[in-house]
Length: 80
Image 1 (cartoon, rainbow, N blue to C red):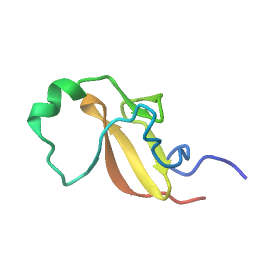
Image 2 (cartoon, rainbow, N blue to C red):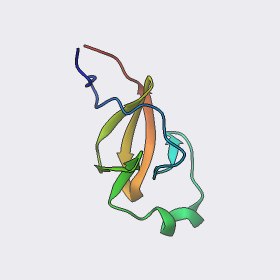
Image 3 (cartoon, rainbow, N blue to C red):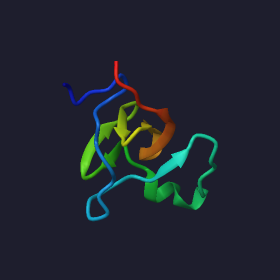
């Protein structure tokens, strides 16, 4: 059995003690005042950096790393 899904590695739940980038729904508008805080070239999940455009699976939730270093919910993860 592999730890990869069709869309990216399984990363588990966000650890509140680790560095994590904010997660938004694809339809959400985030607060523009956060832009300076969010201006990074990577997304963090449990203190691991992921490049823009990367996908990870947190539980069954598919997340994509977007501009400014935020995660966007893309739907669900599934096994091949």
